[in-house]
Length: 357
Image (cartoon, rainbow, N blue to C red; front, side):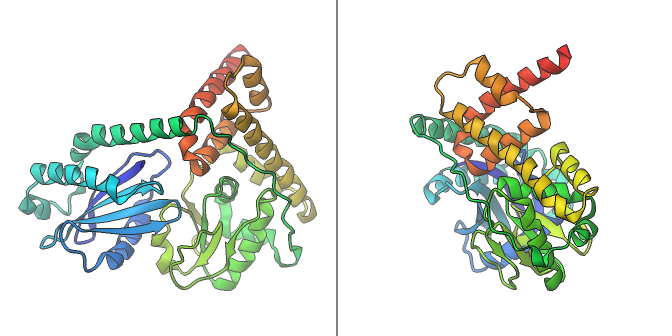
């Protein structure tokens, strides 16, 4: 079990949140919307009970600390967690929080979230210990396992219902983030007018030539079915906190940080004729896929030589290396430790090369 975040709420209002995963930093708006939705799921809980909500690759555990105060502890974990794991850590976090803050103190300061910031220091070591044990155990379990990423046939694309001008207009400056999410298989959630959402989805499919996307064009209810792209009305956005959120009404994208490789890709395709966009994007994405497979070979290798690292680092820069790391982090978290070691060696090689040049 990897704990990604700890959240404490009073009357659905967040008073404490700390992320233990650099890739998991939801905005305040997304967190607020998610809490409102989670509160509906958690209704009827008795004190010390756990309500489990699974969304995508994350699991959310809502634990009622005090019913009268409507005080809740929410643990956000990876998909490998279990109730047995939670029964070990939740009582410890509860005891520390209620020892540090009395119920009256909590309600008196519920409009001052910064008042509870110090609590993060008191649980840091506990969470980090659990996460490190989980990573080490996973590394031991897969020591002899062969990681294989199969080659997929190129998806058959329907070019009759696409519009690059609409994508450029409604996603504006953040299209690179969306293509990044599609490449690493992070769910992309799109909200806006339904017919426009479908047009945007069909066009975005062109930026995933390496992977057959599972698409839900539109749903009015929360759908736990795993999908690569899903269209939803605005009031459901808060439920998809572990996804890349595209709001066509505002032209904003939230979820992933910018990456220079994908930003350059978008900058270049905006200069091309429509018929040339797909071949260019396919070439760039296939390059990343090739590097992913090279990294797989190193993960499977018992001895990694400098020649191996030189081959991996060929045509790479720090931004591309970050993409490779993120891909494995998102899809194969149990390989995190080994991937990190390989990428650190590659990063040192790239920095040395930059310094010499």
